[in-house]
Length: 269
Ligand code: THG
Image (tube, rainbow, N blue to C red; front, top):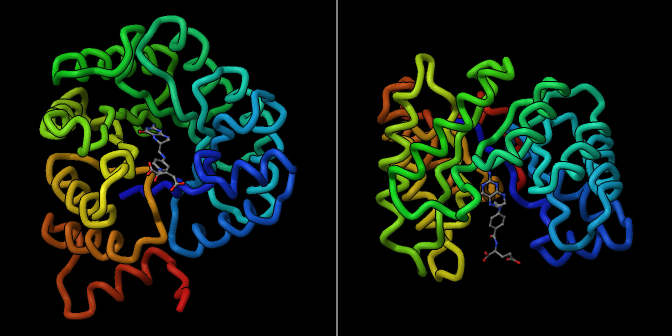
């Protein structure tokens, strides 16, 4: 599983303030904590804290100075994505994200190709968020084809079926699982498949339980990446156990410890 740390996002008040004040402290701190927890990428998003693309370049610079972890540059604005990519020091990166509408595909897919970055394609389009499996599959396939035509290799393409809050859109969750299964059939080898995991638990009381239960169910049908709370130890334990059940990990009584060591996790206790 590829786990992408979600915490450097201006949706969180401490990060919004740090971006507005150009205070590197909390950002470097969250970068170190998520890297120590074993994150494969750190998602960075200036959100509504700033309209200035230069602030994304600043944010990427702060994270790069703190840790060597690859970066997922998260914005729906091409100029913000470009500013983040241009600040990279050569480490691997993801463009998060394009959608399936032509205007976005035409601008964002070439950016990812130009910078040699991977790309996450979210199955939304000019009509907004998908409400059924078919739209998710059509949009995912359209993004996949656009990326392949731009010569982005399948191992750098991530499709995101759009996970929605279970509290408000409960009927969407099984459709997301179905779409994940369909994405695995698009090519051989298939693209990566990723979700914004915390979306599902928004405004719920059992955030951690809902997120990790969805994650193991989605892993069983082909999910192999998630933007998530990498500081949640129960989430890691569920991932390790799901890998075991899917026979990707050898059973031993010490499998949890072996998994943590293989992930290079630094004990925070
Ligand atoms: N797909 C892709 N990228 C994404 C998303 C996605 N990037 C942003 C988002 N969705 C994933 N990141 C987060 C980060 C935090 C939270 C949810 C998703 C979160 N928010 C709290 C809530 O909703 O209750 C509020 C924050 C707070 O506690 O202050 O947990 O889907 N490709």
